[in-house]
Amino acid sequence: MSNEPNRPYHVLLVDDDEADVALISQSFAEHHAPVRLHVTHDGVEAMAFLRREAEHAAAPRPDLVLLDLNMPRMNGRQVLDAVKSDHALATIPVVMLTTSEQPADIAASYAGRANAYVTKPIDLADLEAAIAKIYDFYGELSAHPKRD
Image (tube, rainbow, N blue to C red; front, side, top):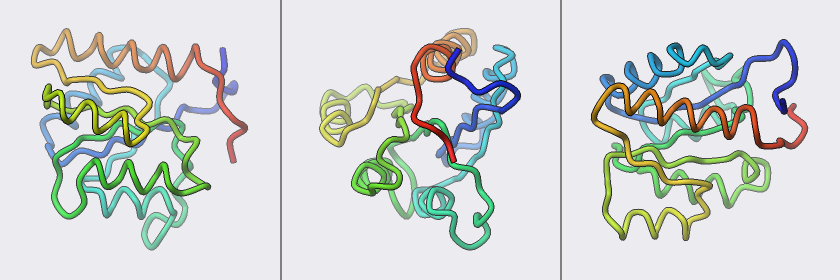
């Protein structure tokens, strides 16, 4: 629908847990979504990717960021604040995808202008369903600003 024909939907996954990265990658594959998944393992690396710095100079602008809360060097709240405070990045949708169900984490994420907050399901089938819903909404249903 809103995805440009013949162009993959670029998703930046920011998560320091390799098992979660593998499961999320598998979930996109199971959904047969035309996604090119890019992975960074902490907030510092995520910001370098988003700002196209150093080894990420040729990185595409992601259409969506899936962001974990608890990471080394720069946590998810700090990344969210940096993204939403940067005029060049602020329009990128950010979905907090984390294991925390703490009301304070949820409230702080929305206060920081997260577009959504999704608690990672433990069950693989539930995770696949959650990833499919995220892609269906952000990748297919919602309209996007012109991409560079």
